[in-house]
Length: 402
Ligand SMILES: Nc1nc2c(c(=O)[nH]1)N[C@H]1C(S)=C(S)[C@@H](COP(=O)(O)O)O[C@H]1N2
Ligand SMILES: [Mo]
Image (cartoon, rainbow, N blue to C red):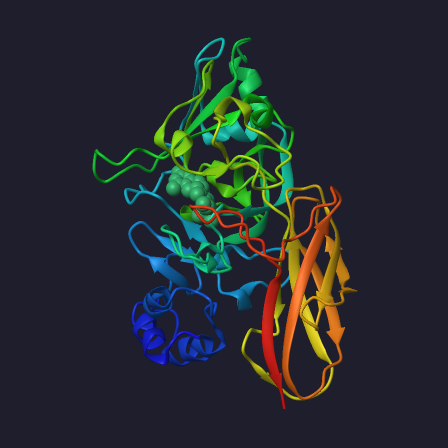
């Protein structure tokens, strides 16, 4: 639990629109994961930014704010609850009227305004945006990086143009192997490398990869990448370039810091199906798709409930192969029973699940385990790696029944 003092300190920086009583009521509902490193749990606090409800602030500059578990109510995450992640602190507010997207390295240079982008056929896709390092704070032993709990993720309905249509308009060169992406944000100090990423050409040309300008029917919020960002459904959010301003075809592997040195996983550790071959080396490979995962959203970890059936709800997701099953165990994994799956918002989205467990008085530990159509399931023991990526151990919540 976040300490009362930390919450009150956090509430001082809340937007004026939130009364102290309201923020106190809210603070009482919010819990931080119990397994975070003690220092992180002490310093994290609730704070709000423009357009957002109070989120769990892990750093202010650059802004890294995660969604409290209690906000995950159903398969679509509201915009004001959506997490925020940045690598660099110089984040300009982009005027949509002045914004331009340039595409270089094609048959001819192409520059698009937001109106131009909206002339392409539009597509809307529900997709999970999950930071590669979601749950990094649970790594054991702990690793360096933003110490995320469970909320460095969200699922929105993203609307925009297909990236492949924009690339086709620019003229895809025969020798292109990657598409390099840059956004309007940059480093405060020259020695910090700018956040630039690349996608393999095949993923950039996938019909589900978008340049989105809307999320959940509204223009993108500033902190989620206004006026336009890349959506790479099924892949972790490191490729979902916000405030996108530059695209470039590349005939060689792009070797910027954020590709060559960061966001890499040991070869063979995870059962990834999608590969980014041009960026692989003998030891490691770029992270690609999201691993199958689940989160119990209710009851909250550590709460006391009155005796009777325990109503469990949660979310499951994967890389878009599709969730086929979520199982619940109340005997520490000795036996599993199937939960009921909720509305299907599309294979890249969150899939809600629910289950009613009978329980006697005392302590009850609930485990959830999701599986997808590719036969992949969550792991019983986390696959530790130096950057703390892909944490997808069975989710677990312990409550007491009186
Ligand atoms: N321009 C820009 N885009 C970015 C990043 C960034 O630092 N700058 N971070 C990426 C990472 S690692 C994540 S997890 C997602 C977070 O998206 P969100 O802030 O909308 O939740 O944005 C991605 N796109
Ligand atoms: Mo991320």
